[in-house]
Image (cartoon, rainbow, N blue to C red; front, side, top):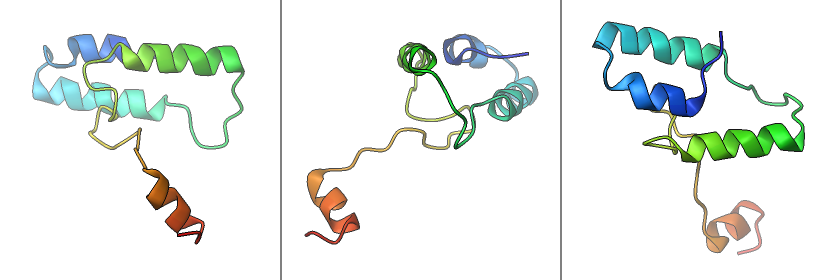
Length: 81
């Protein structure tokens, strides 16, 4: 079973808390993991679906999935600031 990000976001708030927790866990376990190879079309589809959700910056558990860095933070990470 797979969940599209927008499918969970559109029904997540309608679920009772116990079912919401189960749905969040199932969706995270089915999620794409680090170093999983993806074709560009799949990547574009995922980003498009993510942007359709109510809160595209976090997973169903509330963990961040998008981070914003300014140039200074990037330079600092590479010890160029």
